[in-house]
Image 1 (cartoon, rainbow, N blue to C red):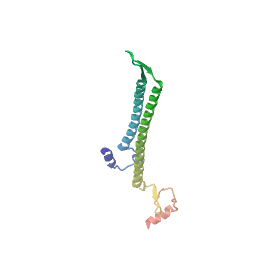
Image 2: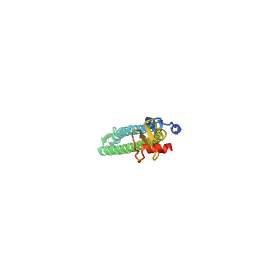
Image 3: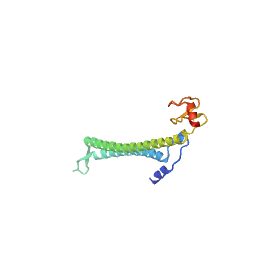
Image 4: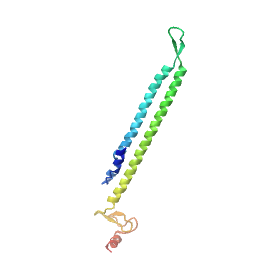
Length: 168
């Protein structure tokens, strides 16, 4: 757990939009934990069903006559189906519990991934988006970047008014 939090403290400034949406080790670990929990739930489900069938078969034999040297057994179908239903219900509840936990860990991974990506995109836009290159002009009224061929900004300020404002 300590490594997970140490990973979050390593801050790398994104240099492109692709860098902004990359998943880090913490998010990859969360996704793998969610997948592992789902797999473990399925393995335990199958194991409980197999053990339950074996237990149902064994517990369904009843001693009918034990007075003789050799005991006689009879198979009780009612007990067999009752034990099967009991086992199936227990296995289903177990699988649902693991599935819900896996969904919660997956949701945490998704929320973490989206939050980090949003924060990094905002950081990228703040650092790199507002830099004016030679093919752009920045409106002095609203701060929007416009391409050189755009004569009037969306706010109504014209390129010539912008140049006059910057020269004064």
